[in-house]
Image 1 (tube, chains in turn green, orange):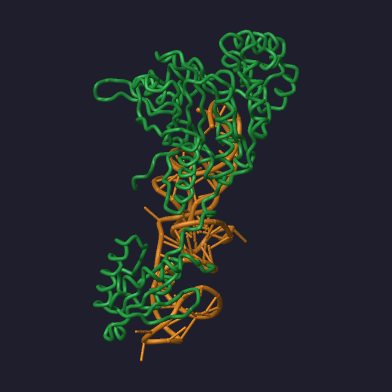
Image 2: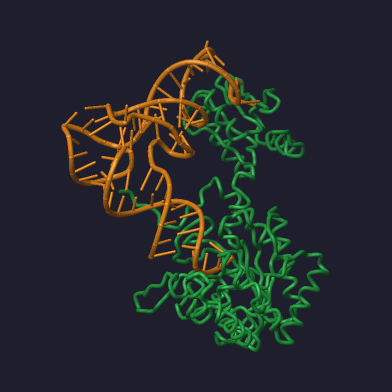
Length: 426
RNA sequence: GUGGGUGUAGCUCAGUCGGUAGAGCACUGGAUUGUGGCUCCAGUUGUCGAGGGUUCGAUCCCCUUCACUCACCCCA
């Protein structure tokens, strides 16, 4: 039996890497435009970090973490999300001492032991953003604007922005109790999952997919009606700024977050093109988290995007591979050696060149050049070499010309840079 | 953790009412002694997911198992 990869952990193969690089490149470009700086934190942290930040009773902490002991007996965990490590670093490195506002982004693999399905894997990748130190609703709106900007930049428009407010530690407990009271005499109408949720996470019942549960809760109290003055004002201002920025959104009072640290503004970028894993990006405000982790009492807000889900939506055959400018076809060993040197010289000049390594028929080499989509093929034939010449074939026009071997590199570089100015139709 | 679906060539799949397999694409070569994309011709590729059972004989039937996949759950 061959050694196989691990369930739910995928290889990202050359054929799909162009999409990944594109999505990452656009993230770097846009986030930096908005003043965010990249931060890279380890993939492994002390287990305690995630227990304290995500919440001891969440599914992530209770049953989905890759936790193990290292050789000194420390309990370590592969990060299941990116916010906690970034905040840990922020506190530990005292980034707040240098600048009261920190705008950070990160990208990389996360790990959760879940049953894999479409858009959900055990090693998955997130691109995330954290803005720390600002409680003004302007930053909420700006984060959302940046998120929308990203989606339009990468050409994914089949998404909808949903926003909500979860209140704060002042107003949420009262709402939670009001909801529990409401559900008390309706428990019989709820699905078995929701009966369980009524004990563990009553807010979750609001976005249960079972129609009966939706019907049973149509008149349920809304968090938005129970926000305290500060939270209600904050949410109103966020919506106002979004309108000012012409960002369309849907208020979804039933949207809940899976991690305990969220407060006030929460949001999701959802789609119906991914099956059941419909959130392609999600986030929210986490005003208590930094203090909870032993740092200064600073507010924060952020989001994470699931890269696999972005890739699924973007597709991997959209981005055509850049065509090859030049392919070298050589006939005979001396010509092949010559071509090899020429290829190396041109590559050092920054030109992308390919050749056939084995000695094969010209037909086979031309076929290979065609497969690369080569713009030009340089044929180093034995007869021409004897005359100190080579043939340059224009693959689009089907024409060819002889070039002198002397000064060939300069001629090629000149010709190819001209061809680049006026790209022919593929 | 629970439930459904699927495992046959590198890929997408067909097939054998049980007699150890085929198509298209891809790949290689040829038609053009040294010229790609179109066309035509030829060729190569399989432990028929694994283990066991029934049988003269199993890729096909039965059992077990593993893998993949979708959904529940959960979430990016």
